[in-house]
Amino acid sequence: MWRELWERHSGKLIGSACGLVLGIVYLIAGFWDMLIFAFLVYIGYYVGRKLDRREPLFEREELLQWLTERWRMFR
Image 1: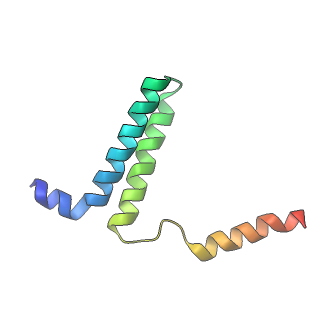
Image 2: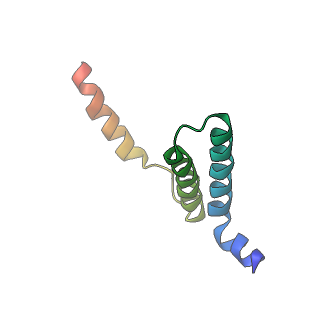
């Protein structure tokens, strides 16, 4: 069971574990808000899910278009 879980969802497991560790470190260092902890765990899960599906973390063309539109107002 554990081997199958690892083979099918290794990215999600690693990402969630990293988010969990970072969240615990944040909670120990300063108990500001539990939303930060949940956000860190979610970010880890999201990155892991993208890795499992072999998808890019962000779409390069969309990011480039968004950045060029945002920076045009400064020209």
